[in-house]
Length: 519
Image (cartoon, rainbow, N blue to C red):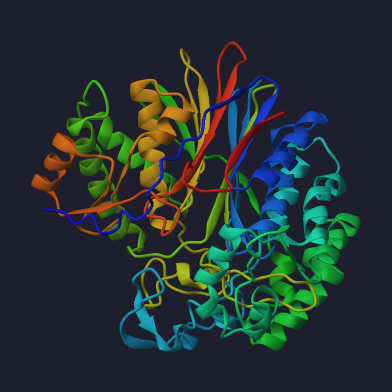
């Protein structure tokens, strides 16, 4: 019999589907959703809103993303019915030397279950840093698809940074969960652990704000001087100088040479729908493979035991192929964010961006307040393998922002955060909506399983009776609560555009801050 020891949160959580016709923004933070929705109200399109959200969300959840991160964006042009990908994934600095990552024996506790590296230097600290590419990605999106000025799209992020981070119970919880690791890095701990501990509100009175140091000035400089300053200007000089002092391989030449890619998405078909997802070294190709496998199986009339067994079968096989051919393994940490937007014209922008682990490399640059990613953890440290460390190389990632187009039903876009759990979540949510006709809210409320490279199936504790029995009969099963913390399942959001112009959206229910807001 499975154990129910992890069923700790004794409340019933609900979030209704949000509807509208003038655009909707769905993110992991209510203040940031409002910033994105306000961009739409002022005449911006879905990409404009996504850019504003991208910068703002790094201020309020800096453990997940920020100026030092990277990611993918899917852009759907409703008039042309065309999807375009923007790949701004990180790359290894050109001064990286694979010999600087000697194997220590055994398996890493903090990476992708890779062979352990001496000092975990591929996972945390200065040698874990990849090139920060998020600003370039957003600049490319604004250039190719935006309608508002660059400076105007940073206004919300600047305002949040000037105010400081609002410290409620959830912020305290997340900061406390990173405290032990942060304490080893004075520049980071000095800001986010004032007095040596995670900040917290009092028992009563207004919520405190955490001063974010030079971050507001950095964002203002970025707004005034333009995105090029981050890669070949004053900000680039400051970033490179601080990175050098911290012992990073990152140089100004790495910043100057990076170029995001505007490219065709990975594309496939699933039961009459067109599925467009992240290309190349992402989880997009694995998502399409899993859908191809699922299409060969018969599902139940509702998400029942037959359906969940089919999900598990497709995910096990897709992950087997992924691990064998792409070099990734299971047990990856993640500190990623995702957000989705649709505008009044039906255009969509679906973004997943990340610092990789919580607070990335833990290297915070004092002159700018930029926290650098730890993108080197995405590489296999064993030389000669397909995903091995090399200078200037792009690593494999888990991101899979996705757009689904249908001739006789509503189009929708979705994404998720959660490392190796991302594409299994997108896979099931897509099926809930396309196979069973669910709206975004119903799909988000439907219990999911997770299969992501190991031998077990993790099952939402709400799945009981014949479904749970059938899964237990066929696979090793772990029953987990879909709760606030720890996050046993990926956190997703969805936007939908109906043929008559009606729009709807939904967000991850257990996340206290997540919210969809209509323009």
